[in-house]
Image (cartoon, rainbow, N blue to C red; front, side):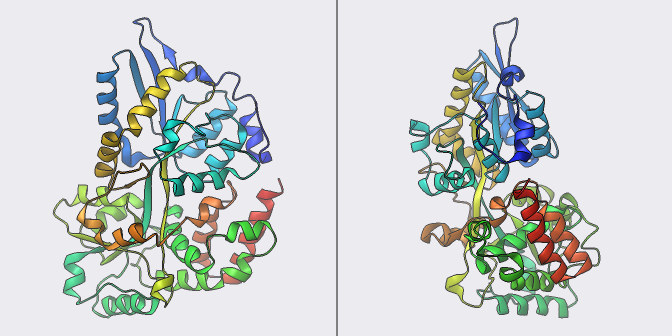
Length: 410
C-alpha cells in the first residue's frame, strides 16, 4: 500500500493503511461517527455550522471535528499510530504531497467531484505530489492570498495611495514612520508569519519554478534569493519595537486597535481582525515586490483541500460529507465566513474588502506559494526568523541550501 516517498515520511506512514479506519466508529444507536481533521483554528466555528447542517440532512452520520494546534505534526504522529482520520481538511503544501505519495489517500482522478474544481488548482496540488505518482489525492476547496492589509482610516490620514512598485511601497512606509506612526505590525514570535512576506518576495523575484530548478541543481538560495533576503531585512526596519515578541493572535488584535497602518498577512486574518473590531475598514493590495508593476503577482495557493482516508471503514458516508462540502451553496457559505476564495467552479468572493486583489484573480496575475514546494521538515520559517534576528545574510542563505539538501537526501 505504501508507495514511493521520502524517507522522512516513510517512517511515519509505515502501516498507516492497515488500521487507518479506526478513528471512525459505529455507535450503538446505529449512527456512524466520522472524524474530520482540520489544520485551521480559524475555521472551527464555520465548520461547526456546516457540520450541524450536514448532520440535519444526514441523521445517521455524526461528524466529530478535531482541529489541534500544530496540526501537521499531530497528523504525522497519528500516521505512525495507524490512526489516520476519516476526513481531512488540510493545506495544499509539501505535507499533502508526501501523504499523496504515501498512497494513504483516496484518488479523485476523473471523478465528478474533481470536475467541480478549477483546473489550475488541481494542477497546483498535483505538482506537489509529483510526476511519479499519478492521481488527484485531494480536492482543492478554499484558496487564499498573501496580501498587504491596510487600515483605510490611517491610510487616508497619512495621505497615501496604493503603491504599485517596491520603491513606492518603501516610500509609503517611510512616510508613515516619519509621521511617528508604526508602518507594519510584525508578529515574528510565531515564525510562520515571516513567511507571508518571504513568499511574496520569493515568488516574484526567484520565480515559481525555483523548487524544480533547485532540485535539478540549476538554482540555489545563495544565487537566487539574495534580493529577497535584502528586501526582508528592509521590511522589518518598519516594524514596531518588539517584532520578535508578539504572536499572531495578539498581532491581529493590535492591528485591529490601530497600532499600525499595514499588516502583512493572508486573507484568513481578516475575520480575526474584524472579530476584534467589527467597524474597522480594511483594504488589501498585492505586495509590490519589483519596480515593474506588470511583474508583481499575487501569491495564492490552496489553503484548504478536502481528502478522504483511503482505508476508512465508512467511505460512503465520508464521500457524502465531501459531496456536501463541494456543493456550490456550501462552498459559498465557507468562503463568505472565512473571507477566503473558492477553488470550486462558479463560486466567487464578492466581499468589497478584496477589491484591491480581485483583478489578480480575474486576469490570472497569480503565482503559487514557493514554500509549499520546499521539502517538508526543512523548517524554513525558523531559518527566516533566525536571519531576521541575527541578520547574517550569507550564512542564512547557505543554511537554507544545506537544510534543503539534508532533508532531500534523508
